[in-house]
Image (cartoon, rainbow, N blue to C red; front, side, top):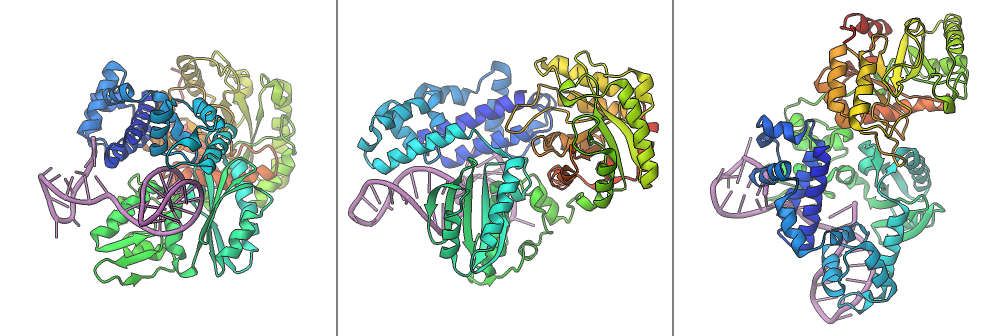
Length: 576
DNA sequence: GCCGTTTTCGGCCCGACTGTTTTCAGTCG
């Protein structure tokens, strides 16, 4: 993908500029540009061709010139220039926690270090402590930082982060003098992965809470500790940060530490234009110093003339402008969900029976479900033979009648390597829901996989494509696929794409979910539950879907069962 | 380098903590 490649190069350019000590605002412009490019919903090539790139906020004349050169020559002129001064590897030093641009430059200039491996050698050879301004503690902390970096590459999936967040919250909640605990940061914004966990605590006696935090058994190492904040590395490999705030400032701190950073910067600018000054400690009138209190985030937004912006939208992707015009979307909530169209039973690799899954779904307030166990080719998941699938469909209908609860007989049908489905049309035609997905042949190239998925979308008996990109957070990358073409095909053939609620998947990615919204492709939010307990994945999945600005109308399992089924009758399902 | 509700020039967030410094720079969020 051009966009991601380009974004990466812009990021590297910014890193090298930091090390060189260039204008920090120019650096930020490149960082913003990198983020903007990564989030574009069309390829930069398309945007250049139709002249739309000039309208993208954050991409001005300078960056556009770089991007055009990149498309023509395959490299960024600015980056090439920097690389003649500083070897590219020096930028990787910034990935080590505790190392910023100044140290990276010093290590390169004074020790000739151009990679993390060389830095590690230098530290082990006790060369760091000989440098001016640095000592033995810094040397040790660099070695620890490198060790930590090796352990944990990148971000942590919610499958790991959520239980940790809940556990630590309850520990903090029971500390003396604690009034409330909130997990802020990207966790509260419902990102698919988190870099660390940010705990905000309103408490009378901060120091005692910080002690409780630092002594938790989950903590591997305390990285820093003061009277208002503390930072720790957890045994699970991610960081946890704690901040203590007075109750009356809590709303401001909550907003600030929920972020995102870009959202916060924009909010401060909005405040400034109104003669106000916004910080994590309050909102003050700049001229008089008068403090405007806020009992809640709602109050804070109201002071600035803005509608309340849900945390999931706070990425500076237009939510502040929309809030000013009172034009924010009515985001989907868990209560809107009426059905769950992808779950497994003991017929394949699930642990519960049809009846148990149905009863649990009904108890959670669902109005209908579909049972979609694995198809015959997926032997590792105990895929069903054609005969067993027929039997299961009969069993599903009988349980449905018995419980007086609509259960659709379905299947999660493998899309085989050649794009065909795993059963014949006669059998698939007898089912109410066919969810098609890829579980094999990940090594195929982008062209092959894209053709394969589009073939499944064209198949008149397919309703939904499940986990369309195959990513497994923290385990494997998505397979290469042209989602632009897949979404166009889904629009054309009237099919739906799934947002899979398994915390390691959350697939579709929010950027693609937003593309579906823009192109009128209905999404379906499913749990893919393999047990009764996993039906609870729905909550996290809905939160994630909100990041794509989805409203109930965009999500087909908020519709009544009749409307869901009717959708496929009214769309073009012809072959080719 | 980007941007425009006092603008085409002059802004662009800032406080807590650490280590090494004897009064502050670097890093982080």
